[in-house]
Image (cartoon, rainbow, N blue to C red; front, side, top):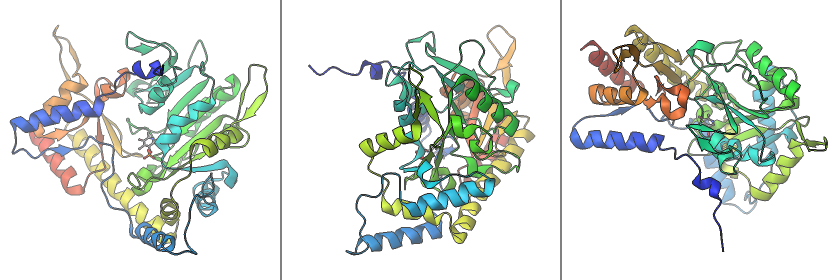
Length: 420
Ligand SMILES: *Cc1c(COP(=O)(O)O)cnc(C)c1O
């Protein structure tokens, strides 16, 4: 009898984007003529840059010839790409990596979800709250999260990040966490972590023999010079951290698919007997068994991101989105909303306005209530913060990935709606 992996049945159904779509559809049925603008989804909108498109065309033409054909590539990715990554993403920031510490993949979601396979099923997980749901769900699928009761997994430590702590989690007191997921610049809050704060987490990991899984998918959006782009800018991180990066938000590769994971040679975890096991070797073993590489065409496309034209063009698109973020921050703050993020990331995390609760006292409008008010009042879609975790309640997320025209129009409508 084939039995099911019951952990899949214990997953909390994350209906966030399905729920949003349902509510938007219900609105559309009632208001078929309304033009709804979405500032909700976390996908890019601007086309691939010319340098990338040219590299892809060239790679396809190569594949059409006997001499230029490429079948299965090297497990860790082509050297041309890993060399470009080391040379452009790390060397200029004083981080020395060798190409056998880079693992090219088909996007960061796969590896942020898969990397936990290398860890003991009972390791205690720490995640920030609100959170990118992949970190929790991928652990829940193998049973590492324990049981879900009273809105909380028994083996997951939620580390609240709110305006009160500057969106950087406090070090956990009591039982230490074994594995910590950190994402900076953060999705969904759009906030960043400074070097001193990141150093506190690296030191925590070194002291407690914990592993940090660092998601830097949005590092290309950092504008302030003193914000770290990589966790390896912190001394000691090579011993305790794995870093995930992606071309998705950097260069519009959400449909092309390419990213990479850095697993330094020194990072290791322990057996019960105390033997140290290199995660670099283990991840190589895992990848060569379960993953057959990213397409040659995608890897040539990614390489082109590092050419002089590629760098300029990719930067222009990032500037375009960050221009949206500036317009949004300025308009929303001008209306009196309390906004975070949006300065080093393409997301704005906005506190919902206070409203009288059932007992008459003022409290932040629940995020789903505000979502509906905004949809019906301004025909603009945001993402309710509660969908990202309990500490997301009282906030909504806006993305800066739209066009200037649609973003401006959304802001105009929000202004009219608020002033009514
Ligand atoms: C978009 C995103 C990624 C990148 O996903 P890909 O699979 O590379 O497209 C990774 N982490 C976070 C938090 C993201 O928002």
